[in-house]
Amino acid sequence: MLSYSLRTNPAPRPRLNNGVPLDRRVSVVPRTTTSRFIDQYSQLGEEQARHFRPSPLPDFLARDVIDPAVDILPSNAVKRRALAWDGMAIEVAQALTHETVEFRFRASRHLLVVYEEGVRNNGETLIEGLSGSSTLRDVKRKLAFVPAGHEYRDWHEPRTRSRIIFFYFDPAKMPVAAGAPQAALAPRLFFEDAVLWETAVKLAKLIESGSEDQHYCEALGVVLAHDLVHRNSSARRTEPPARGGLAAWQERTVSAYIEEHIAEQISLSALAQLVRLSPYHFCRAFKQSFGVPPHRYHNARRIEYAKTLLAQPSSSVTEIALKVGFSETSSFTASFRKATGSTPTAYRRALG
Image (spheres, helix red, strand yellow):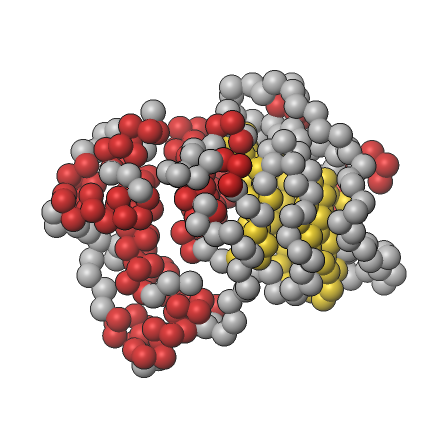
């Protein structure tokens, strides 16, 4: 078992400044078509770490995995695992110590940051294009989006060890939302989105399990990219973090129950009883935690499940409708169109 200890002499705290550019240069090199995994502990010095790339497995080039990647200083403070394919890459960064860590990124790729775990005693996060920075301490379950060409800086003096998932997207291969060009993608900091969250975490678990099912990973990646564009095109400002809401155990209990009964009708009173609240208080607390009422969340999870099924050509649209809880194909099509802007058939066709 590894043991961890707090730093006795913490490093000077970085100061984030919009006017100071990153001292790195973006370089893009060809990727291989085969997905690559990395899992390593880097021991580079600070000067080398400024251009850090995860060290490769035997016979693998690190730049074939992710290039460019988020710089993390000190580089040996985290364990990094990654998987890349054409147009997209995902990286899981797990903190190994309680020492202050800094993250830097500016590239020709979009970056989605998913803070799966992490509470900091102190810290600051900045995304170019937004007014000011954030010193939010509890960043667990928060997301941030950095459009291509924008600067991202983040530093943590952690109270708990963080776990962050980075998603890198090639702008040229991102889907285009109806009526919203790619250039409309806007920076967002510390927002919450249950649908994006669920898909992102599912992909991260595949990475950590060592899955080599490239087609399934790519299908989930396409779903994530579509949802990211769809949601970003309707959000032109940074949303404030949610306050109050359900306790962590209540969130886990409710979301797990909905996933297990995704195709069933679930009453508000049944969910409220699970977490020992009245239906009235549960509904208000649920919306604060998840951003939408329970019935809309349940429907959104059905649509997300349907997307993953549509990515697999073995089932018909009618079979998928029944599998996710719709008694009629017409009602499924209407609900799917309302959520995504396209019919299930058109969505499947767009996946190629």
